[in-house]
Image 1 (cartoon, rainbow, N blue to C red):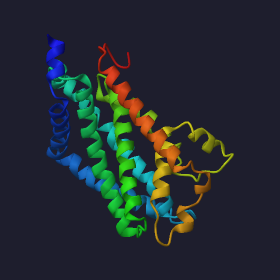
Image 2: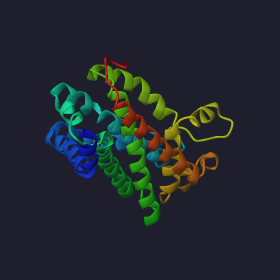
Image 3: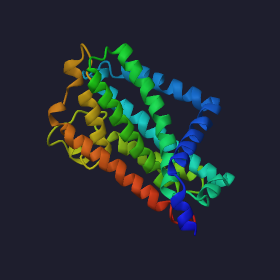
Image 4: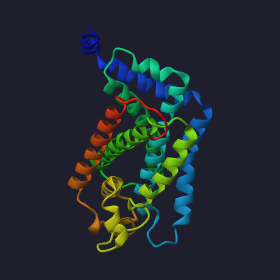
Amino acid sequence: MSDVLINKISPTPVILTLAQRELVRFFRQRNRVIGAMVQPIMFWGLFSAGFVGSGLGAAFFFPGTIAMILLFTAIFSTISIIEDRREGFLQSVLVAPAPRWAMVFGKILGGSAIAMLQAMLFLVLGWLTLRLSSSPVEVLLAVVLMAVIAVALTSLGFFIAWRMESTQGFHAIMSVFLFPMWLLSGSLFPAEEGNWLTILSRFNPLTYGVAGLRQYLHFDGAGVASSVGTDALPGLTVCWLVTIAFAAIMFVLAWRIADTRTTGDLL
């Protein structure tokens, strides 16, 4: 009887309600909103000033900074899973007559939307300060790629946060995990054939998202600097396929782990 009831419940309201709840919680926390607005501006000021003498130019680091914003914001937004478990809200959702995947996707969609808000603000800053010269189609494709990256990273955060019982443990695990993932994505160094870092970065799925953004986002007066190492970048088709596969695999893993019982951190 319960299976029949679950099949009759539309997943759309569940997804939209949970996603909306994540956004409402975000906007009600003034400190998070201020941090979300200030962080992209701070990053842009530090990166544009810090790398001005590097010979690469700020435009080269722009896609990597977008990836960093998506990475940290998307994954750390899943801390709400631990908080919801403590408050008892998560248990209420789990026993509701709705598909489990809808609950997972609702949480992931909300976290991805928060990450996209920050990344879009940073994109606007780049357009205003670096004279973005990409065509409207390229900008649109870059935004869609950013959304896929956000879903993939939020799903990764969901997968890890689901088995965590403390925010301290989550921060400890993710701090060790996130920085190597970002540093090995090609965000800080040009892709060069034969370079051991480039070879190692090929096994990092975030590399292909950064490479795709780097090929879509062009800037006037920064053609040489922003195109350094682009010959060694994977093609756009490969970037899309790997990024979509990364998002799909992580969502399935998050969905599957949500069907399991938790007994403690990571176990």
